[in-house]
Amino acid sequence: MSTSTQPRECSIADALGLVGERWTLQAVRELTHGVRRFDRIVRNTGASRDILTARLRKLEAAGAVRREQYNVHPPRYEYHLTPAGGELGDVLLTLMKWGDRHLNPEDPPVRWQHSCGETLDPVVVCAHCGEAARKGAHSPTGRGVLTAE
Image (cartoon, rainbow, N blue to C red; front, side):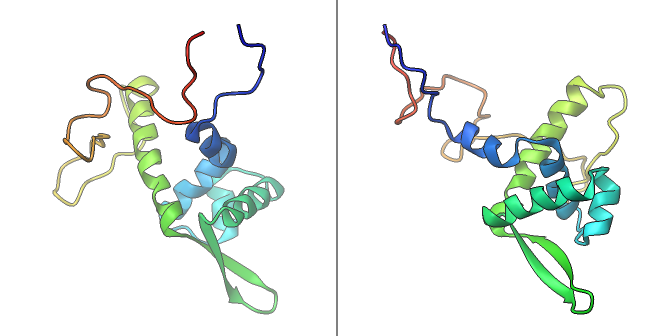
């Protein structure tokens, strides 16, 4: 029996270390909606200014957000998602789908229309076979897999 208290290595845990707090993901939500200015992000998320500043700096340090100055005196910045940050939009869509299904089943607060004209129903699929990711067996591999003892 192992006495190790080391947690399992996992990219989910690593990602949650960056975005696993509500104000971070809500800031990303606003950026995906095209809201770029700090004051509007504060207003739309309800986050305090100091917390939002810390979350945006953390996203910037991780390469998910970049700041662009739009005013010199006083210095003012807009925030933009990098390509890596833009990929978080997929996470938000699947999280929204879960919330619509389990928390707001009668009346989801926001629905997205896809460019095909239909209401967007995001699905995570295997890039190789096209099957839904939840369908079928998952066999974990890699350094984060713990073996049974």
